[in-house]
Image 1 (spheres, protein in one colour):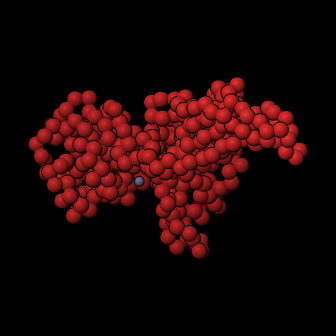
Image 2 (cartoon, rainbow, N blue to C red; image 1 turned 180 degrees about the horizontal axis):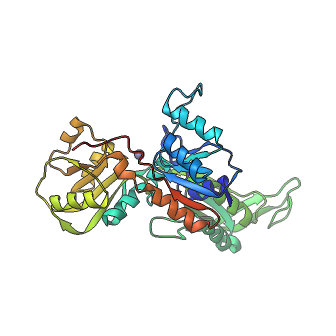
Image 3 (cartoon, rainbow, N blue to C red; image 1 turned 90 degrees about the vertical axis):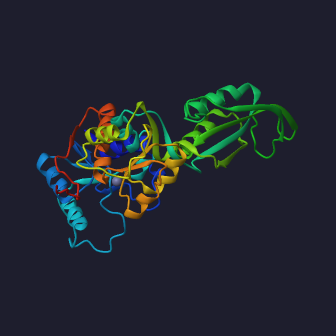
Length: 366
Ligand SMILES: [Zn+2]
């Protein structure tokens, strides 16, 4: 058995809640995180039927992609499906956890799963997030610089794209005079001291800041560590909305739609007119992705696969690319696999089930 907190820590180590959108409500929605669980149920949406299934199969935790609650509730009386789902879960002591836009925004999350299903290679984030990187600089005595660099790398700093252990160092001279009750690492009390120092600079994603600063404090020998943190505006290639990748070989548009229909298990696809060019670059975004159309065009995509396009938005494709709207549920239906792969890799102490409920609220009549 594992606690709900341990399970959440595993998921959030992969998709940190810091990277969820401002309107979102990812996290533990119902339940006590200290509780131990024997069975976990995975689903795209948490509905009453899913809670019912969790009860009948003995699951104590439901992990969903979409949060059942988005806005604050002022009462909980069961007047709609959201409240009825929550009440049922609370009464039966079923915990509900959601990992939503943070899972959309990590490179290996929701969109990577779709890319895998379509066999895309060389994937990159379509609209990289800004303001998620920071730079740490510190001044260290020459003899300790390497140990500090290594400690910072070990904490996760210094990773840039496909490179790790990245840093910049410059030598110089640091001066200080220890006063009061100081116990200086080098030099003597009340005597001006000059030390050969190295300025070390490393970049890190904001969600590991506490770990990086702890590593700095543990490794740096000075009583008062001279360091600074700088926000970096450059886009973070590992985070952001949508993905673009390349098919193993170019295929024509009709062939691509066939592949999409089969691999994404889609009953029908709404698409803009064929522009009679081979499909090689594919942009995609699980769920409502119409806001990324211009990014998809800019990325040179031949097709943009997403969902929830409105009538007038289809016109915006012009002849730059073909929009293929496969439906919100259909685009994200394999998201549960991300959770199950993560949990099975990291735990062996509880069972992981996938709901048998089809939670898609949209039906097709043909
Ligand atoms: Zn969604």
